[in-house]
Length: 119
Image (cartoon, rainbow, N blue to C red; front, side, top):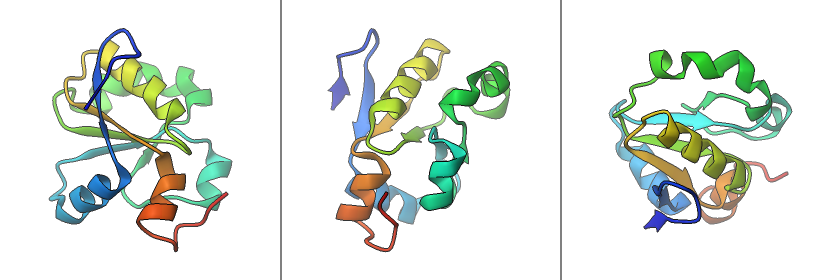
């Protein structure tokens, strides 16, 4: 499914689809979590690189050297709004295979793994 509420479309993935993809991942997925460090202290998923949106100035200039712009890239936040902003920004930077995780870590906790803490 494409998100057309932004200037350029990007894909979305449900948390159930994410769980399947993570189980099958052979290290090819790029996983980005845009939540703040204090949010990660409460709840997180293994394998995600934290790029807090509030620290944009520190990491934005390195994005294309740290990540492959053509690799499948999943973006996570609390509910899916900040990750959608990041997806749009990544597309604007030339990333070609970006997916927003709808519902964020909150939905993951409810629908996939109740051991992931809610906050």
